Length: 176
Image (cartoon, rainbow, N blue to C red; front, side, top):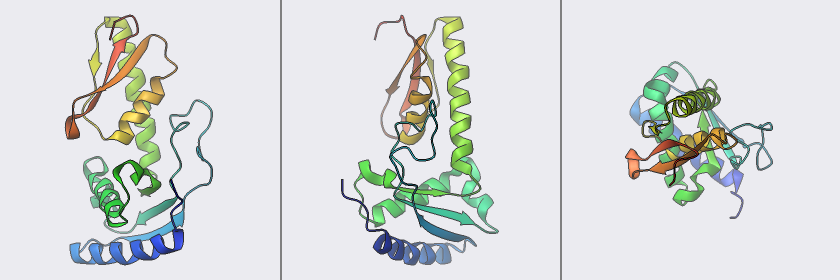
């Protein structure tokens, strides 16, 4: 997979996002920067990010309408990122090459997902019954899978399709 041309992508995204936010009358500022270097930049051993490729381009949003951007679990932030990936003509499997954030929302979301995964795994171990998490996007599912990767008492699988795809946590002894 070739590296993004940062300067070209930055210019295109600045024009696209500025126009989109103006049309939507959303009062936000953003700064586009190159992503951290290295395949697992910013992660530490045992972190759910260990096997997640670092984005090549990041955008950080701020301003009076940040609450709108982060409402409902960051749906608008995620939508802007998705639409921007399409605008840059990135194939679906390469949209992780860009990452948008505001107020460290994504880092906090990762920590929340890791806690949910650990709590659900404890419930599965105690009950012996599988537990399905709510549907989530592929990035969030990946965080859950990686958070439980080292837990030998459980195993995880993604089930369902499209927006209904979710992680199910099974006791390790339960046959697939």
